Image (tube, rainbow, N blue to C red; front, side, top):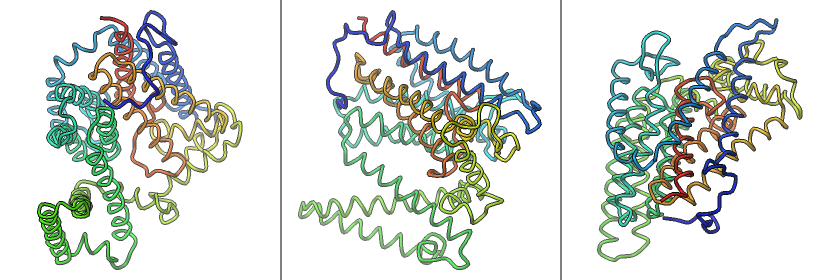
Length: 448
């Protein structure tokens, strides 16, 4: 297992802990939840001061119940979870399959199971189930974690829920699984060449999907990149050509054992796989999701359509200035310029009303979660606990970076919530369950 912090602390030291509990972490997530409730309330206030939403009341219920769930889970020995990790994973794979087939459609994605207004989003809880099962598998195979077999199996474990969520289609939740995979494998000590390959695959696929969407929606005639993905003759030549180059590179490496042939094979394989991923993404993603990628490059190409959210969000954040307009004094939200302002763009409301200084406080609170999470990774008494904590840290980090990034226009809009702040029971409970597991890992760190 890789050591990424400067040495492990003595197991008898309990900094920031009372009775083995990490109260800094507990107080941080409760504070963030309270902030979320306040600004969900603010999102429901109109320009004339009328409250048109009871979402904050539901969030209070989910927040209180989530805190209770967090403490209940923290009392459970996390090692026992390993005994049911496979069953949890299979159960949520089954739920995801049922969701794809029979789930309710909300915000363009078939991602909900339930009756009427009551329901859950299985993809949120599937993230935790996947982290636990992945951690269990990697601990059982820790002596071979650098092997391609273990790496490939770990990728398959993550790929199954990812493909089912992509079929909904829910691009934001799909993307969360990649930092989870990378975090756990990196901490576990997987071969860096394999990790680099996945990162290269993600980068190339993102570039291909984004610029191909630009060609598809904004260009009168397809440019070179667009034709590679849309002209059947060019597609066939590209696939055959890349396949031939991969065979030649493989033969060169086998015969001559030169590193140059290995890296040629490495890059060409990544190109061909990212090509197929791009084709698959265009089959799964809907038009409005592809347009979100287009307006990320330039929101002004559709300022009153797909670009509206980014433009209004950036305007809200910028108008907050240094100290903000004051609680309940924002204009972008109260004049209803921000769509989905209690969920995807909750940070925009917060930044407008609390300003740059308030945003710094929010960043500090989220940083505390990440720092404490990394501390729990480094002091876990076993690999299973470290792997779970690493996966949760990767999940939290991506949620924070992506949501705030899309609110300020430096990341594409994917519909991913800001954990603890955004309205929604499934995401809030998932966050509290994650913290509960980390608290258990931290507490049991000091026991036999």
